[in-house]
Image (cartoon, rainbow, N blue to C red; front, side):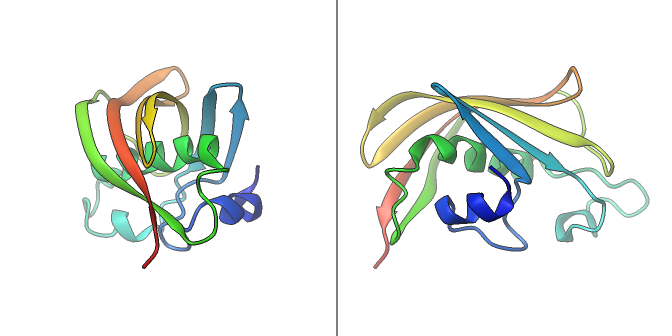
Length: 139
């Protein structure tokens, strides 16, 4: 899926749509985001030495796993984080890097979903985490 198709599933839009493409491979979601260098989150983090903030890497993981929930993510529903566990940042992500994710849902009790994922640049592990979220109907 390219960005246009992702926008049919995800409610995120510029500047917070943090996937360029994604795919579902059975029970695994894989995503990709190329860090251009002009993103809003790099302007102050850190001038002269830009590094993608850890919370942004976690958001990329969350958006990636949502491709597994196309049926749950109907119009009028929004995925929201409910928890982050065992988050480990292993290597910084910088402008010019392409972040690749691999995520899976480990347990589901709708509207709550539990997942695990990792993000790499090449063969370098950058972050891994367990996380949970709820798909909530919009008010």
